[in-house]
Length: 239
Image: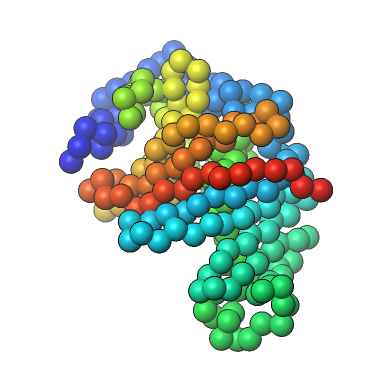
């Protein structure tokens, strides 16, 4: 067990505590750093990124967000096929190689169904919309703040849980004390089972005054096993 996870255990057990700010105040400062003009919830943008895994695989993913309209589109190359899934006005649509006529076998192979697509929408908008997404309805920010070191950076940390209809996981966020940049986070489903993952953020990309992480790396909390890296390749505005 390396130093990072040891420190996480310490703060989760309540051994490191800071009373200077509340969790909501730290969150507000972090949002001010990442989205000072409040652009995220109005954003219309396309992000491209590479998702690499320990086995050497590396997939390029394109996602489009029109957050005010709750629109989402995701394009990936799978087994040589260009697979597109979309959420528009609450409805789902799919394409493979620009063809809308899709066989049942293709639906099963690529998991082209509406619940899966809406889950992907929530997943990508949550990760790329942090810390702003912590303002969403149903999010509960714990008032307690801890002072910890995360990846060698002195941080404030706070906890977020969710109303049952929103989610069941418990999340901890780490914010640089000097400028309130989000530098990482961890989550678990059931603390007693020692499950969950932790994520480190490196670098920074700017788009329309929004600051996104350049690189996101994933690890298993209990063993520090490396799970993969998401690297932001490009960003552009869409109509």
